[in-house]
Length: 455
Image 1 (tube, rainbow, N blue to C red):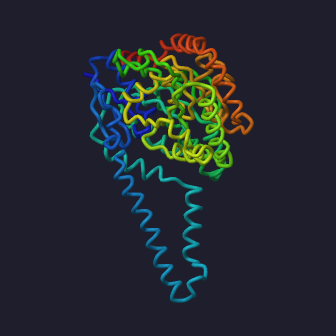
Image 2 (image 1 turned 30 degrees about the vertical axis):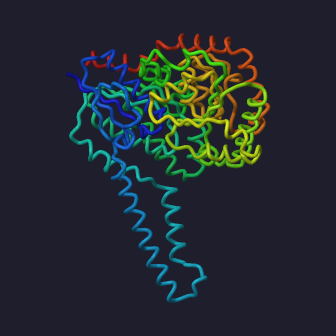
């Protein structure tokens, strides 16, 4: 029996990443039923609950147990703090308390310089590899994800998995964040940037085949990272296989509802990761005005949700709404945070429209025939990948999060208003586009099977 590993790059607590790995395992169960499949994810022990009520035929292994990495980082931090503490005590005896602590400043400066020029790539790789020395697989497939900051964490995972796979290795559809690569280059030294790109290119070249979510990432892979055209291709993101994980025929969508149900999936971290926090208040005000417009013009249900188990942005949004309308409208809002993939399926399947700043919130909706408006930075490329590959109109289905004019409330109101007025048309358009591309969902697994047969 052939042993196949499906590896996730990040913790499954982000439901979108867990979904991609889960769908890949399901496809392997269907297309390579005799295989012995192992699913590996970082921090799987603490995120296993997202797979609740799913019949997944696979072994589960915690890749890079978080406790050990946290222990290492705490040790590293304690050494710095211990040195800092000793320096501060020396300063107190020599100078007044309010005088600058020179040693502390030197340590902070050295730390900044060190992090600018180096990463903990080698140490993390060594620690992680130690846990997998007893594993050997005949083939491997890495679950879909976005290659962005921190780049070295992705490289570590690629290298670890390739070290335990003796045979074929395939990458499920990924996106390569253009803004992530640019931001990484701006905040690091030329030396570190050159080193990381060299390592990234070397890691990617170990794959027998790499799939991207669309033409934007394919172009970066080919032209910027220099990956051979014969080893790259485009396929539908694994998340579009959402319907594969849940077979319940009785969902809320099948029941007649008097009200339209609109799901809003906000996001905060992009504004801070990419130094655009000046746009975050505008973003919150825009979503607030959009919610008020919906309540004033439609008899509808509005649900605030998240693709992560915890969401601080929902608290921020409710705060702005309460400040604007004295809590009257905020009490009408529902807040539903799915705790697992089945709950996520049922949530999106119950909706009529999804407005999302999480890509897989939109993918989950589209996969179930629900129109979605992506409010994300277009320079990130992953939304463009999805829409271009599906052949959906970018202007109708997206808003550029980093464009202040595009982020104005009237823009979102006009786009969603148009969808609400022509809902049947948009549902049919989405369903037709997804069904046309759906056969490519199996390409990564079929490619892996073909490579296995040739060996």
